[in-house]
Amino acid sequence: MPEPARQRADALKNREAILQVAHEVLSESPDASLNSIAKRAGVGPGTLYRHFPTREALLLDVHQHGIDQLTDAVTQTLATQPPLDALRSWFTTLTSYVRIKHGLGEALHSAAAKDVISASWPPVTAAVQQLLDACVAAGQVRPGIDPVDVIMLLSSLWRTSDDAEGAAQADRLMELAIDGFRPQAP
Image (cartoon, rainbow, N blue to C red; front, side, top):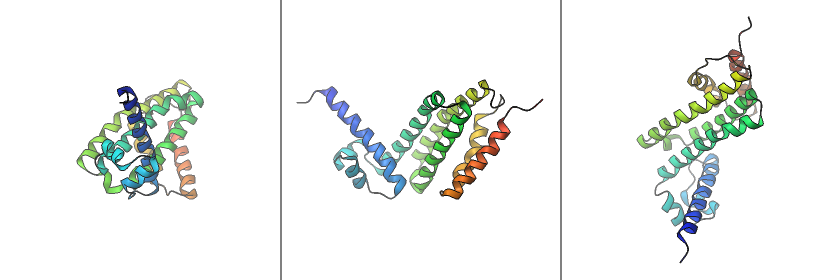
């Protein structure tokens, strides 16, 4: 009989693989079957259903997993880029993530989904605050900017079309917003 710790490690590895693959597959096709996700993740359908008994359970965990990865990335992004570049880069990643989430449409409109999505606001807001604090410390943006205002303002980025023209427009919109964040000249 396998050791319990080994089973838990394998189960965690399978769960992580399923979440990663589900994110990719669902971004390509929101209607992808759970069996196709299991196959691409290299696990059997039973393994997928043990971790995620319903499609909704998988979608909610994919959403939460994405939020966790996104918010956890702030520290690393700030460690590898100047603060204002980190802010730009992080919002570009957030935009891509939100586009995928919107592509799931009705799948994320249940009461349980709304609870999970509402719970994602505090960590996302904290991540934006961390980025703003770094920008303020570097003298790149003025102090006192509300992170929720920044999220609302930059939500325009994920409303642009998902093509080269939309990407160019998103870049212009981000620069307009960032110009408004800069310290005021005396």
